Image (cartoon, rainbow, N blue to C red; front, side):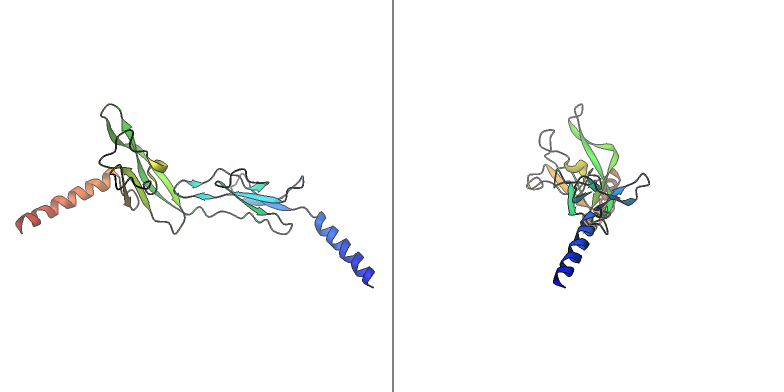
Length: 188
């Protein structure tokens, strides 16, 4: 009887091992579809959401990650693919600033940058600070996200919270509000 159970267990395990492993791939309609992996591949890949820049360029599929900062890997199984759709988080806009060699000053770009972040990540934009020059400020993530460590303190970068918070419209609104409030403080 033990011999019969052992043979049965061997047959079942060999049958299960022969089932192809599956991973999801993205089709032309931008939908995930399960596909059989070949060539002994035992892992699936998927992109990751890189804070303030969006989904990485990694494809969904069978294989291994060459760069763990832009790819996530999971163990492939035969029943249900392990690489599920990655949540793209939320998007917001931040103006991007460029150095103008004619005026030797920072100017706002003509189009905003669309930023992506995890759903629980704060909406933060960065822009050149008061002491920023061509060599002392780099638009981190094209204006998306916080300033690099130490740059707010040295005045080369400034941060603000909110969609398009460092745009010309936001600056104009702050100026308008200040001009309305200024007479009140001069009277007192």
